Image (cartoon, rainbow, N blue to C red):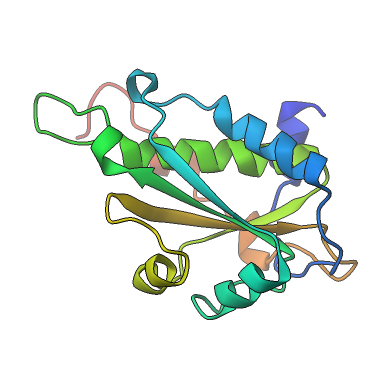
Length: 173
């Protein structure tokens, strides 16, 4: 698919068909995640794939924003495996996890799989429910599946601030 068309067509899907994603589709999405750039190529991302009936049922206890998706991927980062900026100690691993999530979201769209990026989840419940170690921090939940016939973008999807409100050249005034 043409990249410009892909980013125009992609929207947050909140209504999915019940059919599971084939493993080869899941694998292609994970391969895209594996190709995402990370700070100094440390690859601190950790991806928890939730695609069994049991894991999806557990997920529903951690967030109301699962939208009936048959698959979800919880993208985390290992804070102990992060490149660190020397000037202020900022870690790249959380940003790296966000880049990985974006690659997965776009790869899914290219495969005809709808996604919704979810931040509304209880990280402590995720940690407890899925035995996430202390050094691994959940960042984003990407729920996914084939969009139902009723799936459509929310009205706010089409509302963007003017470019001149979000882009500045040379310096902030």
